Image (cartoon, rainbow, N blue to C red; front, top):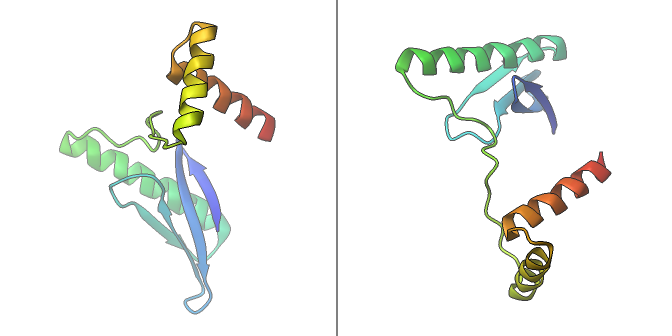
Length: 112
């Protein structure tokens, strides 16, 4: 599986050998936005066209387009880890949410 991006939207793409076609879907939306093409170059344009069509449709309907990532997600962890993180955040004088965001940001920076 591969991913393309356009205007902050990410499209997961796959190749169907039987149909000899690439197809994809914009990830992390409740609305369904799909695209397809026979070549990679055309696939990039198909994603762009689909996202632009989605944004235009939302505008015409007076609907706010979904953002692929809101910046919020729920994480379930071991209660002891939760406690340790909360205590560390308290010692640093920041909220638990702020401390977890700092840790995750540092982790992601070191992975790239």
